[in-house]
Image 1 (tube, helix red, strand yellow):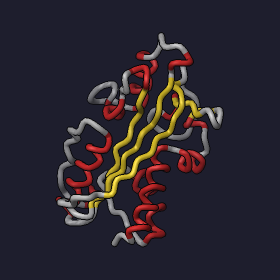
Image 2: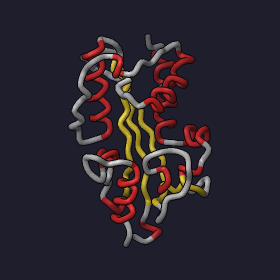
Image 3: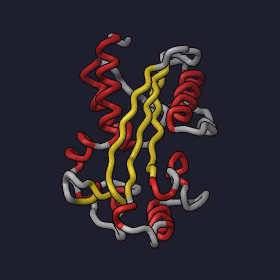
Image 4: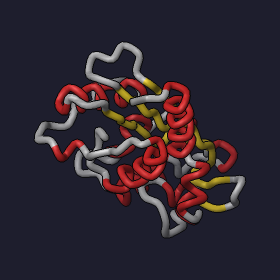
Length: 195
């Protein structure tokens, strides 16, 4: 797994375990993280997966996810994790998002979370498995909810009439952008009988 994020590793491991696949975090190997210089989520996922496959000699799975806000021309987009600067955290990113949208009316606050997954069988894999997912909603005017992370407290999910951070984690994982992308990845792996 081209990530050191324990939450992602747990979530992805649970979904891939029934296929007989075991995920190990890239931090078990000593190498620098990939430089994410792609222009899209898919490009960055491919860069990270290829980098991990090259340094481990094993198949590698990577994801790149973020929030796309229509009224902000797609920002924060691929810069979601560092929207408020180099030392960004969830609080500062959420505050910058709220400040950036303070004059945007309710009917123009549409947004979606997007996730791109890339699985490279080896570093030179010319046909990696790519899976994507999108989760559509609106940006609220204030944070609500205790679950989730990142922009979840500001992401209103109309079908559930609450923010992503107010959803039960199991419900969120079924409907979220990451959940959709993982479901697609698992379907592709089953078709291919990946080994």
